[in-house]
Length: 275
Image (cartoon, rainbow, N blue to C red; front, side, top):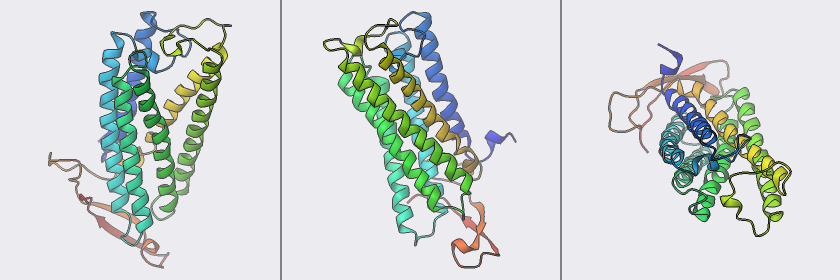
């Protein structure tokens, strides 16, 4: 069995690969058709003009659905590995699921409302995708902190924390540079401006903004890569009813998660069921 066939790690793997393929396909197509400049255009600009916007929309919708499934499995996994007395962790886990699904919904808005067609809705979708998505990363990082060292190792927490810092730094950089860019171009319809000339007014803030957006997207992709090892444990049931039908899986973790005996280990059978 290949590593990506173990448990449910195919979900984050598919999410990462499919999303990356979406961005790459849209970028290559838009550049070849001269719809955008080759030097780091906005991701949205690469999916604005037909025909690439049609495929971009469909592929990004699929990414959103994969994100919903991945976040749900993560929610069920944390729920199964958490004792009932950990009410705060359960609430934090549920908050993460809600934020993640809102972010995925925002991705659907971005995919289907192009910035040159309905900029206000596209902007709302971008805020939901990146803004709420950043909060999802923050919540999941806190969940990892609460679950260490009983379930998660310290290393995965620090990795997720680093990605979270990367995410928020990219958001701040993109926001500040975008404000400067729009301020330096009064009266210009920046939403419909797909080509930029080096040296023109607002060019430097534009480049900083686009680099920040690509950096932000890469940070999101990198975060879901951290789920792969966790997802190698639970196995999808043969039942096709829904994702919450999961086989019984043994999780090994220290018994001091439930008691105060740090020198022994406890094998707990966790059945991931619907709430």
